Image 1: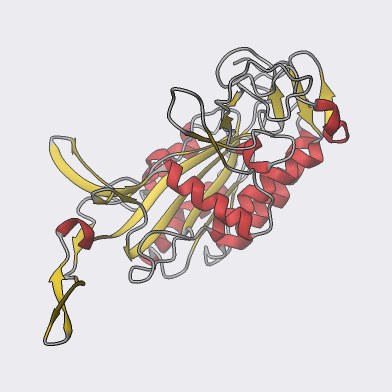
Image 2: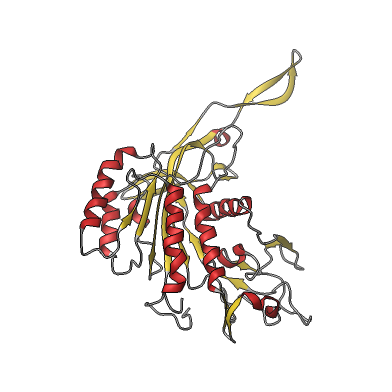
Length: 365
């Protein structure tokens, strides 16, 4: 959709990538055990586990809530003749997750009330988009597990082996990328097609006039300070992601161990190929992405990794960063600490130096 007053000169996206190290875990379970894929790549079959985008978004929401954010209230909608459907408050004025994560309100839009507090029949495309986080080829393994089956023998509970699916766990590095559309964050459309009817005709917009910077027949835009704060809050939660399944016996720290952030004026994530099912981190692919797409990069590139993770890549990564930053043809530089560490510190630095300024420096964003 063409956003009013927005073109390539003031179009802005946050592009990010993250690697999560899981020595032994069961992060995303399905009905047949840990979720996995078997596919043909280059004529060879590979098998790997994954974390769905829906799952990782749920974990980020949990992190936001733990950090004190007020999130949208989930609700089960019961429509006659249809399945019960989950939805949220569908109020992007009030809730950060309805704004950035999007919603679909399946409540019937035939509203005979004067005021539509539930914002019926509306949908919103997420400003925050994230890929599946994919593991590595052959990352699934299993242990020998048993359970008490409730039968008594000699006054003792007997045991029986667990089946293969319940014993599977992953030992892997998950990689994925994400994108935050800054122009659409805090901007709510009044269109009549899917994803862009964010506000119903009878939604009480006037209740939120203190939050609004501009409003007309096509869209409502929140004040810059609110939009900026919401995106900073989301970005600064990423280093604290936690959760998973079977944590009692398969606990694993799923906070990112490698991150990159930058601004671009294109929606495509330039970092998607720097990790794959065969390799944790491809520095040549990172170099190619930054050089080949330098015309769309609109900020410094912020990079950090956890010391102890991929330390065998340190020398090559530092060498590349030094060479890249020394090249006068590269307008923007790679920002990192001397030892490449400090994911939380670098995330906050990006939040302050880039997100903190972009809404003031880019007109009409």
